[in-house]
Image (cartoon, rainbow, N blue to C red; front, side):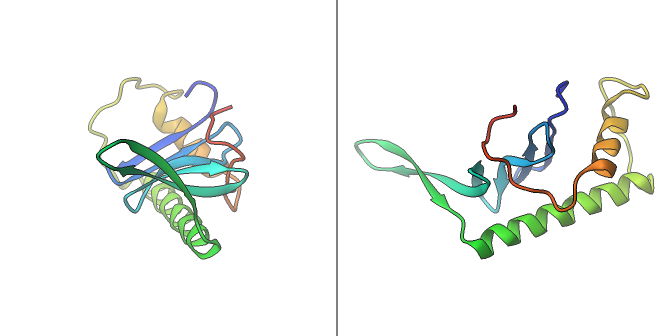
Length: 125
């Protein structure tokens, strides 16, 4: 995004979205939609009945949240190492320039805080 927020779609089953302060705000992980609420991760799922569909929130346990953060940290490190080593094939990009998406992604990865924290809200701002 132009405001500095980042969305990483690593696969259909693994998506990470960050706010402008590089905090994890929401994503898709291990088959579940996750969002940040007051600095913690909440799993969202649909409960379907014949009468209605409800969106249910379930906070992750401390162990689950830590595992998700460790997975995120590992995936970001893998991505940065791959890009730094130029060990990828660029199939195409919309903007090919030094200000294009690839240099911006590399800069974000190199300058991200460690450890990544969880945003207070799933909103971008």
